[in-house]
Image (cartoon, rainbow over all chains, first blue to last red; front, side, top):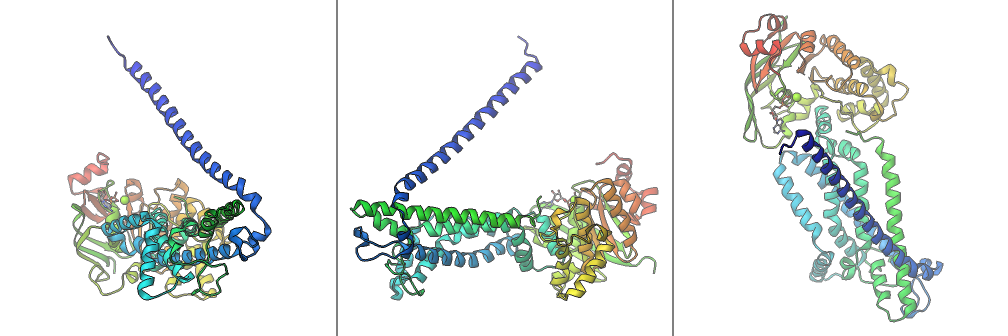
Length: 296
Length: 253
Ligand SMILES: Nc1ncnc2c1ncn2[C@@H]1O[C@H](COP(=O)(O)OP(=O)(O)O)[C@@H](O)[C@H]1O
Ligand SMILES: [Mg+2]
């Protein structure tokens, strides 16, 4: 039997087409599953949460007996979480940005060192937040410190630091080496290169890193469990304990009273909306700055 | 003086990891002339050019030995800050890399990091260098627009203006026309012939015709070695080695 090259070619082409269709369908299917699951979660939160949501809940701190179904709201947790997440994100950014820039400028020449650092950061990224909480708690006991907003900011800041550094690092890595060379050839120092050129070029990526970290900071319960304490009041100083949304949800959800349980869902709606809003705002913000990045 | 040497490279060896990229380079680059580094791709032209302003410092696993003397000063072994060395040379790369800022700031950047911050001074200098790069008329009404909005040819001229603004006396150009359309390429070439009165220009190219058009002095490289160097006329009319002859005939690429 003779198989002509024309036949083989046609056979291959059919196979390629099949492969293409198969993998495309697989991708579409997986995307749909992810979106579906996400919508399901959001929908189930909204279904119970929105009816329980009220103006009072957003504007009042818990009154006596709130956790048994009496009056009040979760303003303490909303404000507490905002303070905590903003503080922790600010802390992580102010440490993380210089570190990521350092890795992509001073350490350019030491690829191996950078790769080891990346590996360690990726390991740290994977460490569950409860470990950070526990270590923070241990240190606090050793130093005889009480639970406070500041302790929470530091612990959550450390918890999101690897995320911040690696996310910024990934953004900086996308900057072409030609840009680095252009900046250096003009006689810039490495810090001028990092903070004035690379940070600008990768600004949208840095915003994404901040957003990612903020989302982790505001949504995490385990790291604040031992470190911030919990209170019905809005903290007025860094040394006071503070409530947070995740813990507030947790406490309400464990209540046997159905009304309080529903309020937990309402609090979850608030948390979801905050995360959604930051996401949208950051996108708008980063888009405005994209025009200066050079596309390569 | 007719043939004053601006850059002299002595026994330069450069290796990255285990591979030797430059082998025993000895060249002399004359002042206020266009010196063309010619050779097939991968022969080490870019690496040689970048070693002249120490951009090779940022490569990992690199080893350099030998001397690069600029006005008699060995820039590989000097106490001077590397930023000072780099400010003496403007760099044009294979494709333009404008800074992620507006047109004005692209040129102000080099001046500002050298401590020139007065608005009046900056405005004057920026106009001057944009004019020098033949770009002023096209951008004078849009200085606040992102440099990314310019065409590739305009971006390359912006990069030239930016390089000139730090007041170098050497221009290093690595195949500066390879990403450009013929008209833009011509403009850059013309600019170079004007600029050579005030600057020492080192131009890397693998385009033979461009080398013939522009070169006063030619350095021919092959597989990391300098095979032949000399005044352009002599080089093109009576090449000395077999490899050069073959290259000029077009049988090596
Ligand atoms: N950063 C680097 N790491 C490893 N090898 C490199 C690097 N840069 C260049 N090379 C190698 O050095 C040789 C010369 O490269 P290059 O100077 O870019 O040549 P040309 O500019 O003449 O095309 C090539 O073989 C290339 O693979
Ligand atoms: Mg090259």
